[in-house]
Length: 383
Image: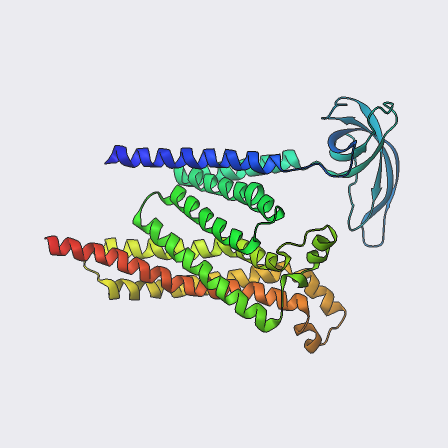
């Protein structure tokens, strides 16, 4: 039995790993460079700040222009020294270059042009090395604190990232229905992540079922609330940019997708917590029946939901915090503020996800109580 279980786990990790490789290949193969012929974005290192015409403005932000000498770190001209202009603006572009820094450079050179016939300017800091180091340290922290479970959790996180970046986004851009696709891939993320962390156990299946019911509840709450508030995906600021860019497929569904992805972790946390609690209660009290397990699970579930829903609402509110300060500075009247589209969107985000999480809890406890109590009843009858 142990060998069978080991083989099942090995097969699971092999299949998921191969699937991720295929998804990465699929997503990468569909990434078409934009900007025109001869245009690229290249990492470069600052060799010298030739001229610095920057200063601090009244808000303390640095503005002005720098002229830099850079060494390209990739591309056909890797190792070449080029000169580039760096214009600093306080909001959209605030890259203050110093010698030794890595930057991303917009580089344009027409095919066949002379080596010194090019245009280059600084695009952003090169944050890639720092991002990789931070992610590696985080995974190392998970492994150090939680051991094998931490490594399994990291595996689930990598799978989630790969699915969203290399499968979900390319398929949506290709014209697939965003809402249906996001729901299906969210269920896939839940199943793979929970099996990776918890294994092929009954509490894993209970958690998956509970989270799936939570997603179904979210779908209902979202469509009802969005209709009541008269909010569609077209109300989101980025929708105009998508339409201008020529993307017209499923724009109204993208708000639904973004909220689901943002709240997926909270739904899974609630489902896993209550499935594990119900399973543990059945172990500590082997004589507990369905009603007793359900009642005990709901007592603990009330505390979990109370804190989790508060956390979720505060998370969505925090993302809107700077805009709320701006409204306060401009002395918006309450009647104007509460009826703004962006406020309505934030209410839709917070309440639809939190309401789904609230119903996810009793559903998970109900399923868990049935599964674990039924198992003991069969055992007693056999005895």
